[in-house]
Image (cartoon, rainbow, N blue to C red; front, top):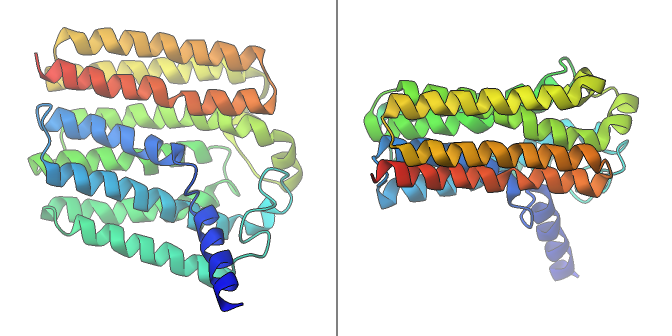
Length: 290
């Protein structure tokens, strides 16, 4: 009996941190790696790679825990989320809070192996991750705060390598705000009707019928910010070639979602953003190795 209870709790914790669904970790990790490879000339140290890859997993998992704590009442009203561990009664708020604190502590232990500036910047990362879940109650732009939370790793990665906060890192941060707002707006399209009934705000609701041109603008602004980041970091031409291809892929995704409004197609479009993001990373590596 005790073993069954333990197994059920571990399964609930796995669901809480979305362990089988690591696309969220990829969205946190990619802008961090963009900055890490730029700052290190395309050759980051094994230590930095480990710290930021493991840190992305831990902080994304912690973010899922605090998100579900904050949204437990809303989740019961949304078809897609009503079976989440807290909303469904498989985990208590106290248990989920313990998961959040444990994961945040482990992430902070990793950061302590880095320089002083990066440690100081990590406090902003924790603050952004903690505040984000509550923004949807008061603002139509929680996706912007998500972009700030997901993009802060780029600033930390740059600081870890160089000991400063450089212009390319800030441009990557800005680019990620545009990118995260775009892909999370697509994600929010799945829950618009439920969100309206629950009183939850999102950019998808804010943009309404203008959502498609708004997404086009967001992707364009992302590409412009990344182009300037490449210029500031003095990357070779192959980076810009990859950036152009990625930009075209983002618009292909947008076109597909626009003409396939079913929930499954919207979700596939959301996840598909990882592909062009990974191409940008490969383009940075190739551009730095010119």
